[in-house]
Image (cartoon, rainbow, N blue to C red):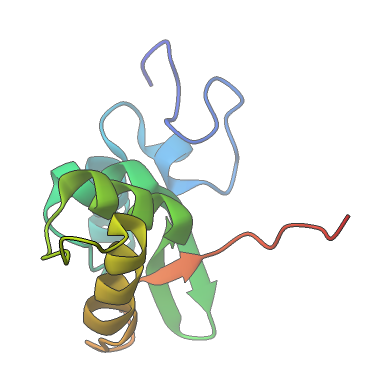
Length: 124
């Protein structure tokens, strides 16, 4: 483990976080190493430059294990990368959200399909 610790938990290592337990490296590298050692299959979004900063960790459900991404951060990254067409008078964030919902949320590639966490803000 490098001095900075896990990219998610920093120096406060989590006993259940594969990234904390795997040591230094990017979340993708650490989770890939963990998956290989554990016999798990993980699928990641590509390209890494756009999506890896949004990796939160791994989720487990019954017999399934899959990568969990911060959905809001994915949309922020897509907006910044402009990997889709935006109408001249359109809203880039809305275009990113529509592109994401159709091309990513709408895709199913098996039990290891990544999941996305969207935080619900409290009503004031």
